[in-house]
Image 1 (cartoon, rainbow, N blue to C red):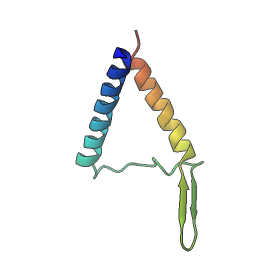
Image 2: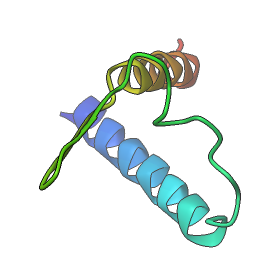
Image 3: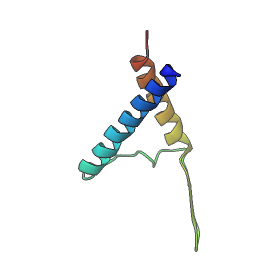
Length: 73
């Protein structure tokens, strides 16, 4: 249980840091994050569907690399 507790604390701290980054640096352009080729965006008269497939894959790879570097033994 000690490992799970540490993982939750570190995950929470990472989320807080990311949240503060978005809060204080909202003027920074995000580039093409969320608008990558492969992301599905459907806009009709009365609804919008957005499914960020490629963005999710890239974000998953980046977070996996970062967490592997943090928890490497």
